[in-house]
Image (cartoon, rainbow, N blue to C red; front, side):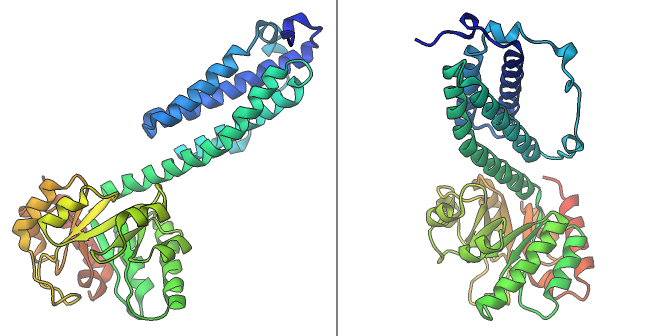
Length: 352
C-alpha cells in the first residue's frame, strides 16, 4: 500500500507546489463547470467536471494544505496581459481548461514519487479534459450561433450578380445579421471563392452565414450552417455531417411540412412562398394566412419567404409573421444598403 504524504519525509517546497496546483486545477474546473451548468445547461458535462473536482479534492491532503504560505509566494498576485483579453465565454473556457491541464501536468510530474495515486488521477483527468474541452467549446460556439439566430429578423438570400460582395457588404453594414449564399449556376471553384468572400464579410460584421443545399461547401468555408430544401438530404444526415455546433434550416411549403419539421434536428424554418416569386414561379403562393398558423405551430424561428418587399411586409407582420427572408428586395434594389435598413426598421418596429 502506498503511504500517504503525511507518512513520508515530504519536502515542504514540493508540498507547497502540489497544494498550489491542486487549488489551481480545482478552481479552473469549477469555472468551466459553471459555464456548462448555467451557460450551456449540459448536465452530462457538469457531472463529469464535478466528479473530477471531487476526486482531486479527496486527494488534497492536509499535509499539502499545511505547507501553504501565500505571504511568501513570489508569484502571488502576478498577472499577464492575456488575462485581460478574454471577451467571451469560449475565451474563458479555453483559458481555464489550459490552466487545469497545466496544473494537472505539474501534479503528475511531482506526484509520481511521493503520491502515485494523485499522479494517476491527474493524468486520467488531464486526458479526459482534452476531449471535454473540445465538446464544451463546440457547444459554446453552437450556443452563440443560436443566440444570433434568435435575434435575427431579416435573412438576405443571395442571387448571382457581378457586384455580389458589394451588395452583401452594404446589407451587412446596414444591420442584416444573416446571409444565405444561394448559387445554382457556375462551377464549384467559383462557388467556393464567392462563399469564402462572404465568410470574410460575415465575420467582419458578426453575421451568420448559411450555405444553400451544400454541406460540403459549408464545411469548406466554415459557415455557420446550411439551409436545406424539401428535396435535399434528410436533416438527420446533414446534422451528422455538420455536428452540433452548426445550424440547420429547412424550407417548408405547407402546414404538414411545418409539423414534420418539428421532429427534425433543425434550428429554423423557411415558410413560403408567401407571394409569387420570380425565383420559383411554378410554386403556388401560400399567402399570409397560413403564415400565422406556421408561426404558431413551430417551436423554432420561422422566416417568411417569397416575394416579400417593403410594400407588402406590413401585411405579413399584421398576419403574425416575425421574420423575413428576401432576395430581390435587397439584391435587385437600386441601393441595397437603404433597402436593408428600411426592411429592418419595419421588422424592428413590429410588436407581437
